[in-house]
Image (cartoon, rainbow, N blue to C red):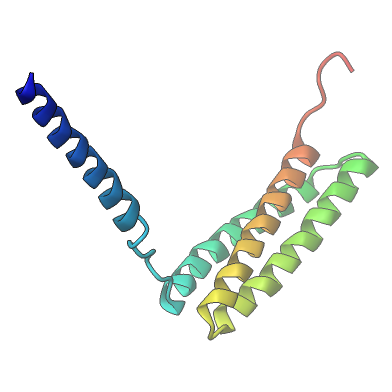
Length: 128
């Protein structure tokens, strides 16, 4: 009986020590810091995406579309120009934090452009 008490006491102490170790050391790992060079490489990849979207936009404008879809394409073009402006800011940035935030904004704008392009070029259902 005494042996079991001692054994479970040791197990309990080890569990408590393990939990404390995990809690105290879990947050000490640091995130990798993003450098300006990393952001400029990401900006170059993003610029490629913007160029591809520009080509898709040109293809979509070549096809005759209803007025509402032309309006969507115009909005997409405006957003694309906004993304280009923001991307130029990222390329000229010297502070990583601001450049990272601006690059995130560029990606948000690109998502909006893709959504508008998809909506504008989506064919109507056959029943309508």
